[in-house]
Image (tube, rainbow, N blue to C red; front, side):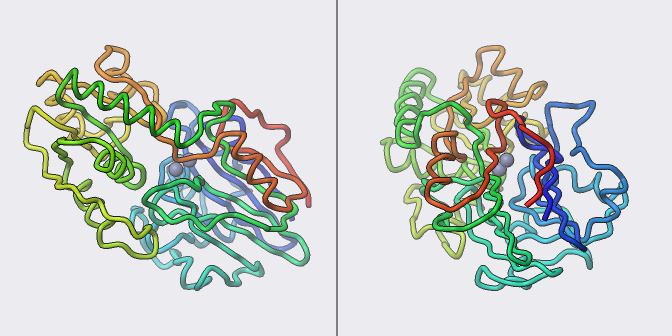
Length: 355
Ligand SMILES: [Zn+2]
Ligand SMILES: [Zn+2]
């Protein structure tokens, strides 16, 4: 097997890994670098793309799927594979879309000459890690991975033997652990809520938003919660439970936001790029409110603009591993070689690996 890194190592975004076996080629993820408007796509040639038999998707965030349309435009004719939940979150349909569950029910299966194991990542509903086997070699991709999620199930990557492993290390040398990050976020939210009365949290459509609501509803008292329609649906899904969710419930009432001036407002767009999310953000700021961004901020977005103007600040809620936690994962497994991905702190050592 051969691995070519087409993006995502030594940078934050454009996650894309090209794997070649003796007769098949596949990708794991195909994301964009949102901050690089001139050159946002993975480093793949038309020739590479035409040879591809399949793309395995770990989850639906833009830095993992954002270059798929481009891939199709470049002549990709293979199969697109992701969990059913991830597929339901993605804009792609058609005969070349296959659910992971149909080829690998119960976490194991066989496809295009590969033996495949997969598990849940704790990062968002539908998020999976993959372990591919071919002959006596194997390669593991953690996807975006966190073991501490309070809402999403994670099948821990433990005691795996792999020749090569590509593991989340998005927070690089920042060594603040999950518990400390949450304490900081809760305390700061309480303080800012006392000061401003109204707080805005822009969150991804799928993932950490419901975890924030769970965290706040368990730790803050007498707060009114609001969200957009999509967010309210996500909360309902957590409370309904199912395969992707921990058996937890969010025991707090949350209403559709209609211009109230006290409480916490969730809006389902992490960078405030959409018109509807901007409308809500402007409304909150006009009412004297303040915003908190909990994930990576993209340059040139409305979120970044508010940040610059002092109308918002960044306080992280962890949904990835840092380098120390990456090392912990490598110690719990038997990886011959491993590559930390998703961070500027950890530069790419080489483009190609042969196992
Ligand atoms: Zn992600
Ligand atoms: Zn990512």
